[in-house]
Length: 285
Image (cartoon, rainbow, N blue to C red):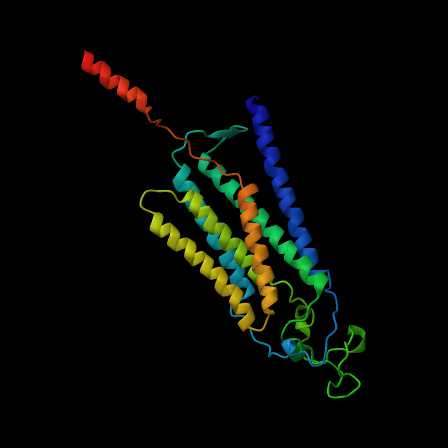
């Protein structure tokens, strides 16, 4: 393959990656803002929907900042340290691209692709199921009188009531309990980070530090998932499903969807039988 063909192949790969990621981001925007969740009904005596509304312990902005920023920063540092001395630079249309830059790109592209998959999967589940959150009654304040015998012991469908609460900006969100997007996002980003550290943080003397960082990342995701139950944002089954989905996505994406640049071994150890033969020859001489 000529240099020009190699440059075209590399440029084509980058363009296709960007188009794919842009398409996935567009689908995420559509499912977030244009797709209205299924309007599920309720039972008046459903105690699982009677919890008070609380603010998030882990806000969405904090989730995005830590979930994206921490793995991305770690990948940039590790790839630079690991590949900065590699000499197999690639030239694309006269521009030399060092191995560490290509390593950062491969790591971030694989990680970002998985993030889009997890986000899109969670959005589809939320809008399709339309499960009310635990604070449904507090936010919605249904127009019916649940103390009336007319509404007791029967399923009240969505067209039989309307919400009278003043938190109108939460009317859509209160129907998006299953599955937990916070839990799936936290599980994917932090488990993927832990797997990445196991493979790329391989310098001498970093074993204890590596395992400590891995444990800290997993605990961040675990705390985020548990806070969704204590904040009355999700039922425990929503959190369990979301965390399992994010965990599975991280393992699958790392195992089959991640292609990293491996550091070359510049020194090859001498086979043992060659060492023995050299020693014998020296003795004879």
